[in-house]
Image 1 (cartoon, one colour):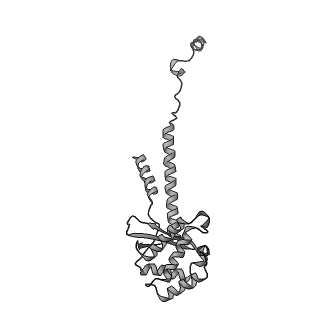
Image 2 (spheres, helix red, strand yellow; image 1 turned 180 degrees about the vertical axis):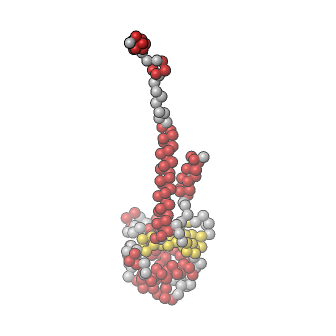
Image 3 (cartoon, helix red, strand yellow; image 1 turned 180 degrees about the horizontal axis):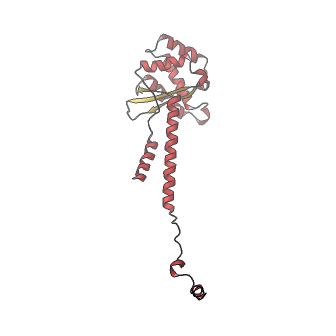
Length: 201
């Protein structure tokens, strides 16, 4: 009892009275981890998008001075100069319309291909008439300035439309190389990957 009374009056020892250290709340580290996770998520999403693009869009590599590349570029410029109220359809429709017009005068194309393009365009009064047929049609620059990438995707109901079969066949006649698989990473995707590598090192 006496020992207990002494212990009770003396109170806790100095060692036990020390406060337990709280876990550090490093906001900078948490923010860095969050940014890393966001970057990884962006790269993962971008990879999936490129895979879907590769599976649904046909891509051709053409010389930048080719007839069809010129037609696509001119259509893009003409669309950019249209007044806001005059843009009745998305730009890719104008690009497709201009390339079909180029097919009608392509001397390297077969007579059947030219006739098919003329017949197809005859009842299309405006570029917007192509909206049910095409979902993607664009020309994009490549790292190699001597070549341009032409991308074309058709609506499911018109995949077998002969005029577009002739159009892609004419691309090949002009020396186009069809590209398969997902496209390469773009500049923004590469920049994010480099930043993530820098954070890991």
